[in-house]
Image (cartoon, rainbow, N blue to C red; front, top):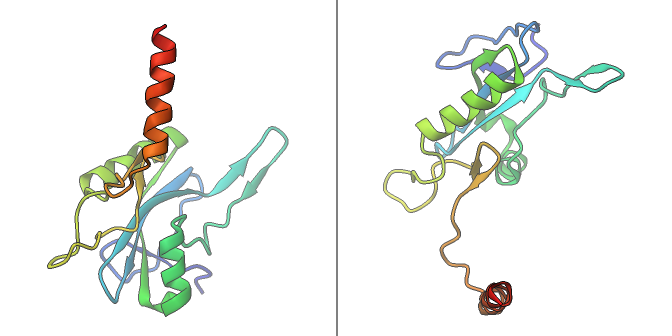
Length: 152
């Protein structure tokens, strides 16, 4: 009996993990509206003293918006799929970024709307979706003032 919610991508086959690998890249899809999330998860947490299994079996992504939707409409309305497993942290992070960029998670919108097609608000943990509507005149004044101070 399966003790997690993960499936093989593109099928309804139960995912059987290879715990010799470091972790996996996944996609979680809202079955009601098609909105998705691409991320990665490692199987174990490591520190100098010991290793401990992560919460990968029950993990539902790190997006607060995704988790709000899961809470509101129920986990049964989401599909949790493993894209691929990777043997080390470097490969895991690389392929998480690869799939996020391949699917253009920061820019693509749901067909016929202006709503983002992905819950992701950043890729590779570093590059963020722009906030076009944010304008803070006080911040701009401070930035200009600091730049002038550095010039002198």
